[in-house]
Length: 484
Ligand SMILES: NC(=O)c1ccc[n+]([C@@H]2O[C@H](COP(=O)([O-])OP(=O)(O)OC[C@H]3O[C@@H](n4cnc5c(N)ncnc54)[C@H](OP(=O)(O)O)[C@@H]3O)[C@@H](O)[C@H]2O)c1
Image (cartoon, rainbow, N blue to C red; front, side, top):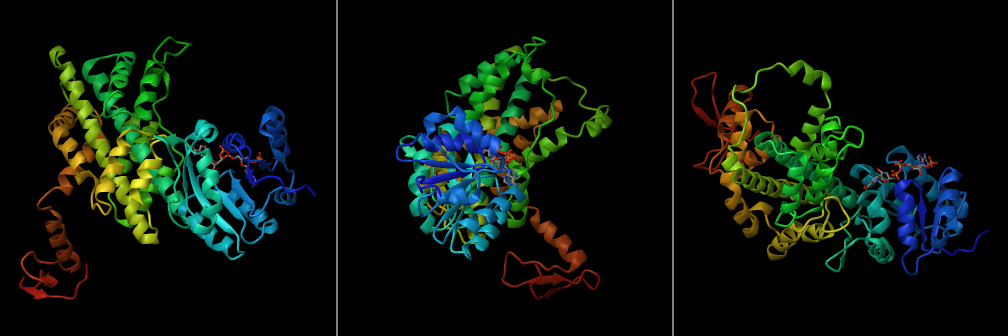
């Protein structure tokens, strides 16, 4: 039996697990036990990184025995059934008070279910969203842990030691109980979808409107990265646009097949938002845009459908002004997408009874993760000023930015529609903006229709109560039982 010498263990040593294990091992005070189902990955990791001082285990019992108590293990295996299989095996060899962390991309209802089941054995289960991919796992990810307060006491210092650091603060916070961490990670990914789609629409409009080359547009993005749009995604967009294909000499972006993939977290964000009744139109449009791109047979069938007669060309003298309009439209749409994402987190917290500090969430996204950006400081400021802010985009800083950008935003959406250039995220964000700020919505007519065909009743603006019009009778109004 090995002596218990490791304070933390990692199960699953593929790309993410091995990098996270190395990150843990590089931090003062950590000794890391490692285990992988098939032996080769463990042997490889030990051979390639003797400096890490890993404690290898080749079975779950040996793994448990190599850990000091309370045992703490982070699972980094394929999400879904493999995660359940590993949890079951660890529960067999762990003891009450020990901590199992799932660092994979689990769907939050699975995390809620697992936490409940594992808790019965007295073992703590923590679902932790980990963002930043391979590089983040190695050098410092943004970490979104859920789970109990008890487990956070042990886990907090370990996770703080490996997380990215932004402006002196580690990018990790105890998000809330059970599935809160994976919920927030899911919304993070949804926002990431929206941000990427908005950037892609900006690129497309500039390219088709001005005829600039991808390398020239890379310069535009690099310049934008110096201002209020400064972010990792803008930075890598410039890198991708500047890249030429070695084989053809063409811009790489022109030889990459235009069908965007997805691993499902965007769809989860939208499905969850639908069931919570939260409009996340930016995220939804971004998710659907990927789906649309990935149906080549339908795109081929639609290729001959007519578009506008006129081509789209911004006059030479207007190019700089057009690019500035696109920048403002991008920023305004981005504000909407983030505001919607934070709304979803707030609604999730209410639904599932989590006490989530929205300002703290924006802070832990400032480093290590894909949506890291200066902009997140403004979100933190807004929640610091008004913790129960009903609508993020109505906070003074964002309201000013939207006011400053709205005329340009409208010009861009109009230009895109007239030119036949798809801009679903720009367009839907603007519609959301106009919808949420409207004095009166045509929802009144929808209520009238619902009452007509289904006697669903309606409220009135001028008095309390619930009403129904006798549509198939004499069309007088009666007071009715609320059937909304
Ligand atoms: N946050 C991010 O940016 C990010 C990026 C990538 C991945 N992830 C998440 O991180 C997790 C790990 O990702 P990854 O790409 O490193 O690995 P992966 O390809 O998702 O999974 C491979 C690992 O799972 C193990 N595994 C599969 N089935 C198993 C089972 N039934 N029992 C025990 N182990 C099993 C494999 O062991 P064998 O070697 O024995 O096959 C291997 O260690 C996933 O949940 C993934 O979604 C996150």
